[in-house]
Figure 1 (cartoon, helix red, strand yellow):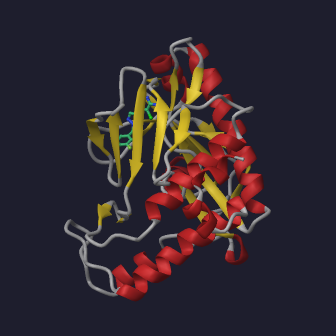
Figure 2: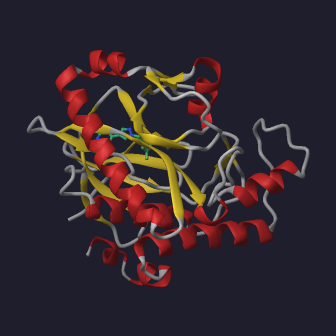
Length: 287
Ligand code: Q0Z
């Protein structure tokens, strides 16, 4: 028995293949992007960290919302998934005021149609998490939309189910991570509809690439927060005079090693599994 995978597309750091009409393969590379540019230097095992974390969250949250995971491959970096009809919006959940949410709040006092209390500071925890959908731009940045527009694009009933699913997973993940010293400021979900018409969580879940992870020990509202995973890379890039257009700079060995250690630290804190054990037996994250 052999399988031939058809390459369907590339993300910045992941590849998508069709295995057959019903199944896809999502493969996470060791590439890293910063300031929206993929760097020429890989972070060894980054793809395994992200795949292991995603599989961990899919297993942990399957009773909150069904997901597309069929199996985690022995390479630790590939997920076999059910093929879904993806919703035309990304469902972003924000528990903290950062990024485009902070920008929009400063300009208008609201984020994607959510009017927020006056006087909030950058990176402040919101009174409750908000859902801020975005349309998937074919190029460049995602476009924030309000929930009324998302409901129109998805169908109101489908959007209502998707937003409750996203909120439920975010609340679970944010609490779990907070107990282990990681603030999940926000996270992006992609959901779809399966052959039975059920809304299903697809893509990746609560990874550092789909979320903002902040170290809880230095969290302080009123300023931007350091990234749990990418801060060494960002800080080093800022010392080089790079203009943040492609191609990015090659990373020195110590920045690669420090960044790899941060990804592994995030994995170990969140899963409570030594990363070496994941490499020896990836299925351990599904238990
Ligand atoms: C995910 C993406 C990547 C490029 C489509 N279960 C699913 N069913 C149908 N479509 C998708 C999924 Cl996950 C799907 N993407 C995002 C991922 C490389 C694009 F690894 N696009």
